[in-house]
View 1 (cartoon, rainbow, N blue to C red):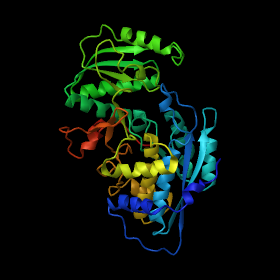
View 2: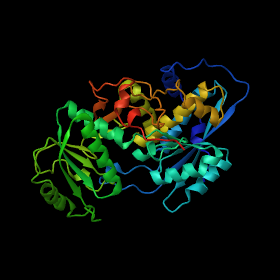
View 3: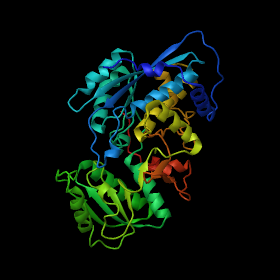
View 4: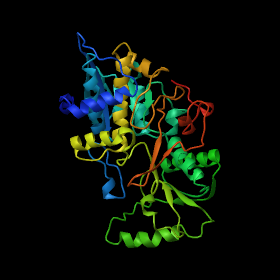
Length: 409
């Protein structure tokens, strides 16, 4: 178990103060006033420290991926919180595949932590939820995209900050339909996560009027292409793998484990764009995003951590800001008061995406626009023009209320 991160205690600079106050002003922050006593609001972070497989060396995550976003969010909270008599503290711990997640959570609970950010896989997240229920722990899901966490396995003590697979697939589908690229070749990997992502694309195609002309499965044989002969092997294999497909407009790749999708662009038999797990990708955030003040956040992050902000960083920042925003308005600083306000109809948070983000009451999923990026810039942002909804266009992404299968427990 690590100590509370000392870097979050340092006073922010003038630009950081202005940035935090500016973000709060988008939602009409409460008037600053001095407080007689300081409330200590403790936030935990259980970080999944298992290596993440990547095809490109450029995609290998930093050791502090996610935690860096939480730290800068904590600094923003403390910038405004000191005027309200609130002090936020971040307590971090690493988790690996062989560790007992219940023991790690118990260590945080022993330090009076009831609000816990975590970027663990879905199965580990459910184990943490079961372990923390009796102690009143609320978990913030920063990484797991499983639709089941918003459906049959949903929990009242899990706030889903990360977008679901359905949201990501819908974001891609809307853009492809808007472009009138409605004939898809769906290529999926051989892992369970790939099959789940493929299900999301099938649902999206049916929902928005696209057609999957054929599906192909790329089997993971465990061979590594990161060898001297790897490029030659890939250049020969991928055209053959995609040869002979029916006429299609775009290849949709479902490869969450990054086994093959990164090798598809420019190597398909037919000259077709690649979307999904490679090529044009749906993301909650991208390092090139600069609209709605995003460039200011990116600059602050790069100055502090000497790297670019990732989607997990942004989701961690957003979760911490959700806590800070709720704490400033809830009328109390206990975890129960903060979560009660967060789940209420008045809650919203500004997150440099052009509109307020709110929670869906039926599955506790954070509504948010999805960026479509090619790795160099933001190509588009979903929801796309023309996809309307009777409540909010953000509910055209993911599982809407009429489709909801969540029964909280």
